[in-house]
Image 1: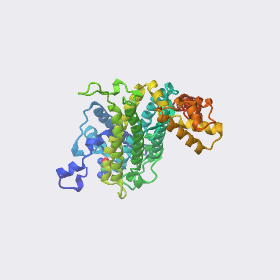
Image 2 (image 1 turned 180 degrees about the vertical axis):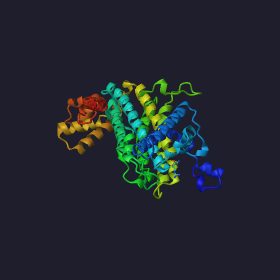
Image 3 (image 1 turned 135 degrees about the vertical axis):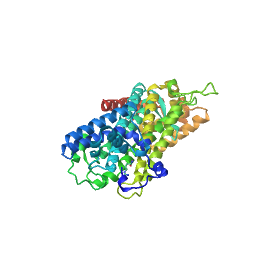
Image 4 (image 1 turned 120 degrees about the horizontal axis):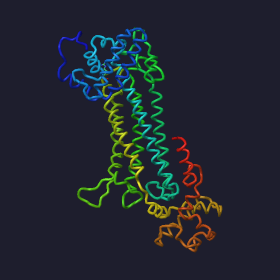
Length: 456
Ligand code: ARG
């Protein structure tokens, strides 16, 4: 491509460190779309003839067919996807191929290809997240009133419903989708027309290529257009946060599916056995979702370090933007799909969860609240009295305040009446938490309805 300036062929090591076709071949579709739009613009503005454009479009069609058939010759000596396509085009259509690169550089070309790919990855992530939300919504609807212990510090805290717990993740994954949508909005400007860095002296129309490729506008600064990868970092940040959220649900599935908890059973389709221990059911898919977050965060770190301190504009360092992007979004796509499958297929052991919801003095706060409401005690005093009741129950070998006799309660606070037992069951506890966003089934159903309307 630049033979005019050089007299000796590149060293084999030069090719080894420089070649990117092994991974940027994944940008073939984006590269072709960009070239088609660019050629159409060059013809519309009279920069190339209609006949040359027709030849280029026909040639790009042949390239596309070769790619689809798996017969396109990817060659290391042509370094990257851009030069592989251009070289092949030249072989297929001859001289007009040489006009395609008018008013274009690989710098704006690669910025475009990567931007198109990341934009597509963001869109796919939003769709996958919505699929996951739908799977969780279906479970939440079934279990809007199913009791389970809610935890803080992984210690039983207050009874909640399983539906409420799942809806917390629906909220989280909704924000994850929102982050991808935000990133998309900001990245949706076209770098084409920036050429190498300074723009072009040829009378091109960057608005036309921007529009043809679904961008909102051409990039406002040609140097920024070729130098920036913050759009990729932003998408990787969104992917990282999403992966972290996924890892939390994955970890809960691991915990809930242990025989010690026994809250859920993952389907056979998403469990594995052991080659030596016949009784085992391992939650491998959940564990791998949990692990993918490490890989995805690693990609964000890798590209952050590549970009840090790079002077404007393009530097070959930026060729290293692609592998972290591909790796992160491949991992995220798989993690989201596996999580959706696990969420859709899991069965909840509602009896085990309800039994656990009543244990570990989970309704202690309800007793304290009752003392505040009925006896008008200051909350701190109510907290102290309740603490003494828990201590007494524990001494008697009980794990549930509802099992403590009235006489025992009255020995601690004589004004306690039999009515107190109405608030000490986990069912009553859950039903009473009707504050907005609370765990009362009526509130949980309202949360479900809002998301169903939103996702429709
Ligand atoms: N393969 C290169 C990349 O991925 C394309 C841009 C090369 N530009 C250049 N001036 N060498 O970044």
